Amino acid sequence: MDAVAFRQMKDGTREEYEFLTALVYDHHRHTADRLLAALAELDDGLSGYQVTRLGHSLQTATRAWNDGADTDWIVTALLHDIGDTLAPFSHADYAAAVLKPFVREQCSWVTRTHGEFQLVYYGHLLEGFDANRRERHRGHPYFDDCVAFCERWDQASFDPDYRTLPLDFFAPMVRAVFARQPYDPAVLRPGHREPLVNA
Image (cartoon, rainbow, N blue to C red; front, side, top):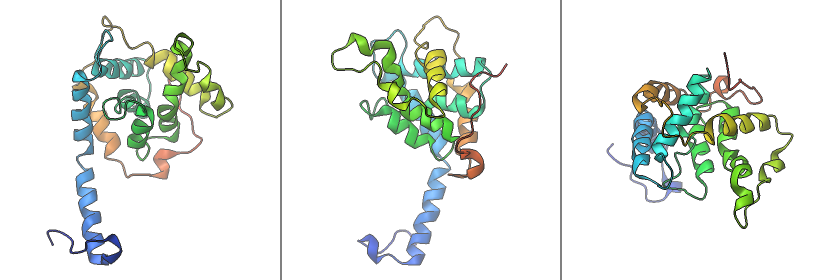
């Protein structure tokens, strides 16, 4: 079979859906490569900072690496702004959706909310922004993790003089994470926390 015969989903057969599912899983095997290419494209994205969006992503991941963070945290740090180009007004949701099936719940939650937590640094300087927006998450088990993520890694990673590791250094970690079985309970571990800093 080269393609399904149906023109409406409700008309599909078991054989056709098994065929399509196999294609999805085959396509997924190349997700890491597509993400690495998308990261590289961030070099040509939004400007105005002293580093490119790729430079920011690499620096954030380098800070995580230097702090002894685990692979989930490092890949999260690298991909946390992957949505900047295609979803500038919901980039955190976009990145979290990419990561959610493959990393610890702690990491995908921090990714999804980091944009709100970052407002503490500049929200008071702009009309219509709420610098205290993160307070609506106060009491959440991962609240302090997002505070630390933003303070230690994200907001600090716009320094053109910081010694930043290249994308090739992180590529094996990205490939390892996206080679995992999607939504594996042993990976997601809801409620489980791993430290950002591990001496």
